[in-house]
Amino acid sequence: MSAVPLLKVKDVSKFYGSRIGCRNVSFELYPGEVLAVVGESGSGKTTLLSCLSTRLMPSSGMIEYHMRDGLYRDLAHMGEAERRFLMRTDWGFVHQNPAEGLRMTVSAGANVGERLMAVGDRHYGNIRATAGDWLRRVEIEEDRIDDQPRAFSGGMRQRLQIARNLVTAPRLVFMDEPTGGLDVSVQARLLDLVRGLVHDLGLAAIIVTHDLAVARLLSHRMMVMKDGAVIEQGLTDRVLDDPREPYTQLLVSSILQV
Amino acid sequence: MHALEEYGLMHVKLYEDIARNGHIATTYAYPVKVEGRYVMDPSPTPKFDNPKMHMSEALQLFGAGREKRIYAVPPYTEVVSLDFEDHPFEIQKFDKPCALCGAESVYLDEVVLDDKGGRMFVCSDTDHCEDRQAHGHAGPMLARPKPESQEAAE
Ligand SMILES: Nc1ncnc2c1ncn2[C@@H]1O[C@H](COP(=O)(O)OP(=O)(O)OP(=O)(O)O)[C@@H](O)[C@H]1O
Ligand SMILES: [Mg+2]
Ligand SMILES: [Zn+2]
Image 1 (cartoon, each protein chain N blue to C red):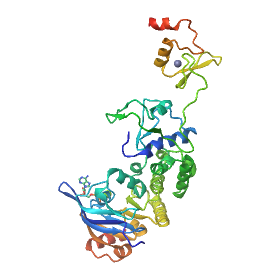
Image 2: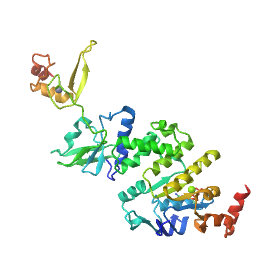
Image 3: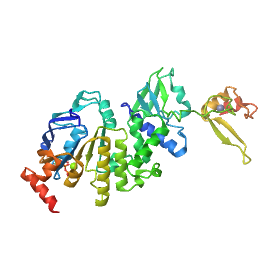
Image 4: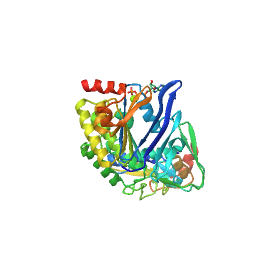
């Protein structure tokens, strides 16, 4: 891991009117590092992820991203065009529901190729070949390249969504409950795949999950949220094996007993 | 019209076209890039006339119905049709002029004349074609002896 953080998050809070979404969240994320954000329903995980990925504007605090040119940029002061460019080149966003992250009525090949075209790839044959490669990498038969995701199973859709996001070799991927809507056996296969890809590509990732097993399998570090605040953070094995906060202890013991 | 350089989506349309048809089959609403920056769908201009938009002397107006807006392309603006390196933008080439009015370099429709394979190619823009005929232009298939007087009667 490099010595300079990819993302610097300082005192980020988000209020929905008087309701707290998340409050005073601070952390740094390094290149290649996988951070899991865990906590019960309503604890602010999605709110935080939305703020980090510029889908929501924080009420206060600052988020800085280390651009490819080596400079830090305050995300709140980025222009719309620049922000969009960042989102479709250097970042990925994997939604829990694949229909939100895919174009359901265009082919799998075009779903994967879209980002390539958005960054200026203008050779149909190359775009199609790259899309085919990526389908294979996420274990979708290459002969499904002209099929629409409508005709795919839930697990296939999620794998397609991942391919669509990774094709431009982003440095940072946000995932909100990536295995949420899937059967247990399908989940296991997807987790394996994500773990392999994250490792091979050296991706940094922030993964929101309420499933501690997902955190254990995928993340280096984790943050536990409660009522919008981060109550404990540390290396994943440390937090899960030796939780310090009573709430984390409860969370861990309840899952281990299942 | 997409001001935020969203080229990707317009190219997706063209990609799908090639994946489905083996070539870009789009003939209407063929996307263009304006001044190297803005991407728009120039309908109702047919693809065949896209090249005429480039560096046009005229102010060109386009309605974007869904957005309830009108976009203007100023005179002498660079307008380039989107394409792929291995599937370059091409317009249909017609080896003969319009069979009725003799016009060249206009978009022609094929018209079937009988059930023995007889056919002719005539202007897609019928107003323009009739106007030309009324002004005495004639193509090889224009059989009427006095086209002007017939036109004038209408
Ligand atoms: N758009 C919104 N408007 C108002 N309040 C909201 C909105 N979105 C979230 N909240 C509130 O903010 C708090 C945090 O919600 P958030 O969706 O971030 O939780 P979460 O940890 O992602 O929960 P889950 O595990 O159920 O997805 C909750 O109290 C929620 O009701
Ligand atoms: Mg959530
Ligand atoms: Zn004619």
